Amino acid sequence: SGRSDTYIEMVQVPQLPGVQVRRFGVGKAVRSYSKVYVPLIFCAIGEVPLVATGSMQLVRQQTVATTDQIQHAITWWSDRFSCWNTWIKAIRALIEAETPLSFIREYILPTKGIVPLIFGKGGSSGFLPHPHARNQERILAAAGIDGEIACCIAFMTT
Image 1 (cartoon, rainbow, N blue to C red):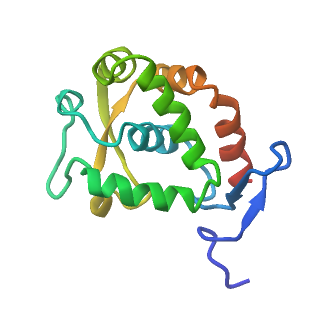
Image 2 (cartoon, rainbow, N blue to C red):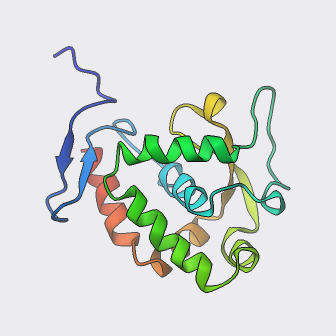
């Protein structure tokens, strides 16, 4: 058909009135939801706190994502998920209910591995520390967005 599988029109998610996703906006398959969850969490935090970078093993040209890169990523991700900014606000409310440092200690640490800030563009977008999957899920559940985001990812890749 000549269309790119990675960039197709925004479509309504049937189970979520008013919510749209860009079909295949993160590829045909997302084998690990961390590729979406971790950038969302750090977009909400607004930075990569130094305390969270301790176990990051970066090679060659890899760098920790900067606050400017995170701001750019918010636009990139919002172009793929219409609810991205709403999800950020939900996670920020969770962070503000505690203190940023207690949130990092409770939900982010320890980390293992890295995740690109922008799916498929790691080198140019920077990298993020990878919190354990159970902590990612705890954040999304506590923010009340776990079902909605999982539904959106599943729909956009089918």
